[in-house]
Length: 211
Image (tube, rainbow, N blue to C red):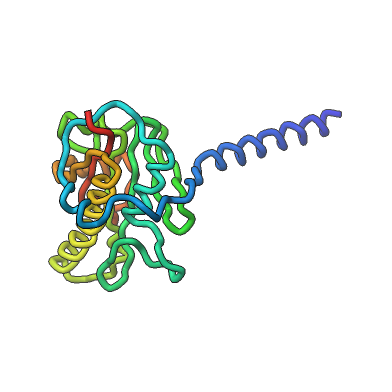
């Protein structure tokens, strides 16, 4: 009986661990890839906004936002944004009131990294803690495989800009407010995000409903 109880307890522990692990991944709904504002109108409406309401983004909107930034748009696994030498070295993190998530474009899902609200750490501006989502763009220098420091900085910077512009155009189409930011305490944020030394925070971008 004692042995049976021990086995039962072990099964419960394993089951709970498995459940906790399953909860770390959020499968996103299919992004909306049709319709929206015509491109030329979106370009006309594109602007930076620095005032955000406290309203959360619906999951469907967050899904399409992440896909617009760095989703897979072709069967061969390529993305909505280009990357130098096809390195595909960029990672997109989303900091929300519910925690910090890593976007995994291949499976179109979010992997929870932290349960803590770290939006205030994603920038030095007061409004960052109010925005529904703060996108943090991180270059994996190991994937980039570029030896020259100047070239590495140039190409990862250019690749980040492609992602940020995709987000700007999506937000213009959806009536959302967005602003890209470079004022970040990168060492403090990198430490909080548990990034490796060869992962570099390039920029961040606040997104949310306008106030």
